[in-house]
Length: 207
Length: 378
Image (cartoon, rainbow over all chains, first blue to last red; front, top):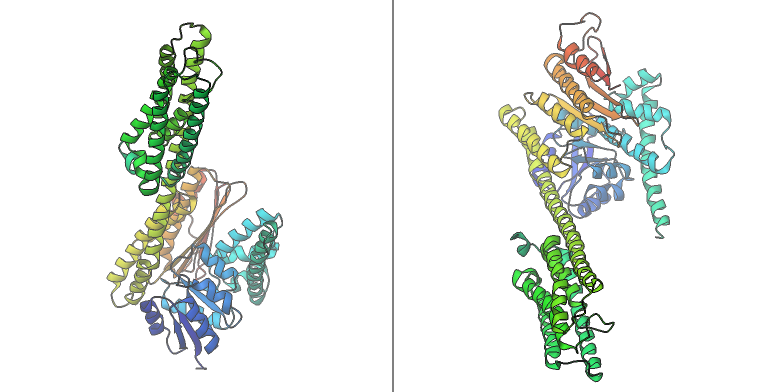
């Protein structure tokens, strides 16, 4: 066993934190906890962990604020109750490494966190569907689709539940390339959201 | 219509405030008319004229006080009757206070603005019908005023003038009352929706979180409790998302309902079902949506019952031309598609259902490699 993954937990429900902490197992070491966004940002800056697991809805900013402030420090995985949420997309667009649904089996949560700590996007099928929808919306408003045809194919296959390996086999590319496509897609989502804001600001005369 | 007396919607108070200002302006105008007319000696009953002014002044003062302390008073029947009586009274007395021959002349009168204020105020509180009816009485009141003014040279022109007056005030009252009613409904809707969103968010943040935790912590130790928590979680989620969105079911809701129904009796600790629905503005016909949702439900049930899957992914996409594509994928045991042609549920429940609405379907599977059911609605 290598050194455990140093992790910060942010959730305003004590019970939830206790539950996650208790079930993470020996691969993880919880180095900090916070019950609101500001506290989480402080702890993350002070402890410089390998990974952050943050609730989406918390006092003083929520998961989105944590991602905006700390996405460059380490991967941040958002914990959520429901995956059908726009806020979730905002967090992912702001740079979150992915998200986990609170009701998911603990084995899955564990393996997803290990993958996220290794820098892999935790990109579930339903998030892929949400992102596909977002790009379609963007394409409608900006009349150019920022996604390449290949990226769209990859995204749709992720949304249909294919693993990177399966996507590689299906499209005749390596699994690593498939994963890189997903990373690029997230980068584009991040950028297009920002340019959306800039365009909005210019059109409305804001600085 | 008792509910009107208790519900004063926010915009109504703004309008009521504007009406108070309008009453004071009317009062100033009336004072001006009485003073100028007195100088020209055009007033035959100055006392009555000043009493009209006093009446409007009293109502202006009272409404100013009411709007600042308890605006609901301005929407009660007692006040509205006073308002209507004042409008009608002014219209009648207007003829009587002036010298004979005043009516139908092009000169200033006491009762042009107040009836307008009255019908707007009544329309705001009681809607178009009552306000319209009050508006209609202004014409006859003016006719009475003309009689008191000793006018007797009636011609078609005068009758038309009085009918037009009635119609004018009735129209103002009706149109304004109608708009006020629309506004009231819109504001009630907004308030309603806000309240429901608050409840939904609260449940979402507290109860669902706890249920998720209970569900996971008891998955191994107490499967019954885990299942109960899961069911409660589902019901609550359906309720929340059901009330937070539009009442007619979207394709996404139909798909989620079908999946939930298919998974109802399965232990959630061993299977995760992910549902992604990309619905756009190009809606498919309801029959197509129902067929696709039904096929998805069947495919999920098959995956749960026969394949022993740990993950099921449902993906639904709607094309720009309204074609629905759905994929139901599991990582279960899979089967040899060629070896099993018929006799299994797949053919009727999925293929048949989709064929009935003019679509096609495809099943990709091999032993040990899971199954993907794909359907297209055209």
